[in-house]
Image (spheres, rainbow, N blue to C red):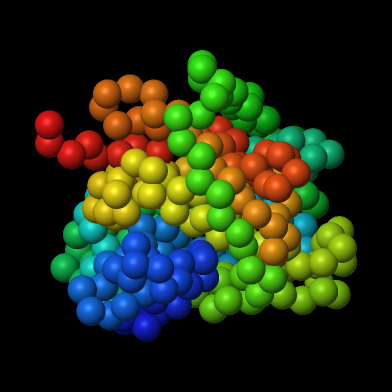
Length: 270
């Protein structure tokens, strides 16, 4: 995965960053910093371009269920990355399909691990293969008090999916009306990883003073469809003094978009 300043900036625009003063560090090549969730792009491009055809998966039936990005070092503003994808497991959920657990490890040219992606996908056509059901899970509810200490509201653009896909996720579900209809949606939907990028913007704004080096990890479960043009509202509850934060993202109709969501923040020296 070879990238330069322009590709880093294109990704930042794809998650809604623009020309506001706080955004310039991500969209202007002078002192450019990489927005953290750019780290999902080498993984998803490898998954769509290499893993899906090798595994014989039909994209019409595939949904992204969960994703977590773990950052070990700041991502350089330009360079070459080598990403290894590992299929960890396939769980049989019966008529609901199969859950595929796929992880990715991205290293720089010197072999140092920069970040890892941990992802669950749902193949709606692949259940009932007499496999293990896998571990159970339940939605996480916001901790008390229910009123979130921070709330960041951001609007996606009508062309958000068309822009975001240029960073690496070329699944036709997000651009082709006919493909989206065959997959069971009225119109193309926004990428789950784009929604996670918007949520990351909320976390960085509220807890990190927009400093990407302070984000250690971020992840969530995708539970509802987002359409380009929707408003995404991220509500967060820092849970301990070590920098853990639980959050959720809802849309303009208060439907939950991201749940079981958490981030780990490196706290500034006291």
